[in-house]
Image (cartoon, rainbow, N blue to C red; front, side, top):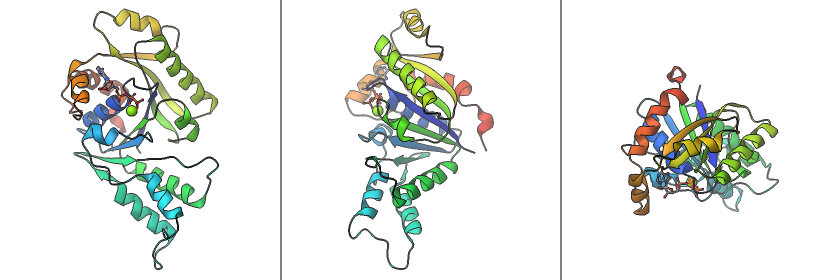
Length: 250
Ligand SMILES: Nc1ncnc2c1ncn2[C@@H]1O[C@H](COP(=O)(O)OP(=O)(O)OP(=O)(O)O)[C@@H](O)[C@H]1O
Ligand SMILES: [Mg+2]
């Protein structure tokens, strides 16, 4: 059984940073699949992994003229093969990049098969971390079936927290099966913890804080990857036993 985590929140609050660090930390003990579900993918870059292609490209390829499987191969076999080809092998984890989502109303055969195969693929890992695009779309698009953990990331602002709360409500309205939801306020300056806690007070969400980290910001501005030894990584590492119980290991 895989433990499935989705990371969501307002734009620029640190979703991909948190996702990439979790992938690094969890791959020390688990078999991890990182899923980049942001059409403007950059999780591969943050993890220093080349991305050979996206699920969107596989779908578009198969739907395009001349993208048909060879004569001796079924569409199913061909799709599975293509999906394997775009699965990037990172250092201790694999990375699946979703790319462009299907157009509205695309309930086509290929797309349904892809969903089934992506779900099957997820099942072969003990941890799946899905880094989502900003906003709400991905939730209604059902990037993930049921989730064990929904991490709502926010910056220490009222707007960020309000977005997190809206996402949390949307998950409920859409009847998504979410076992646990937490609010992670990221980028808190030291001495401002009480203020961040105040912002979260009426949300009813379980709260965790992460501090502003100069090392992460500097690395990111020079295009460097997240390594897992930054101060922010140490903070996250302390949250891991609580958020990712190890009895989920197989
Ligand atoms: N705790 C932190 N301290 C300092 N800088 C941070 C912290 N967390 C994230 N950042 C920086 O904030 C910027 C945005 O982070 P990131 O790309 O992870 O956000 P995002 O929510 O994934 O953005 P998007 O909505 O564009 O996908 C990056 O430059 C990142 O290095
Ligand atoms: Mg991102």
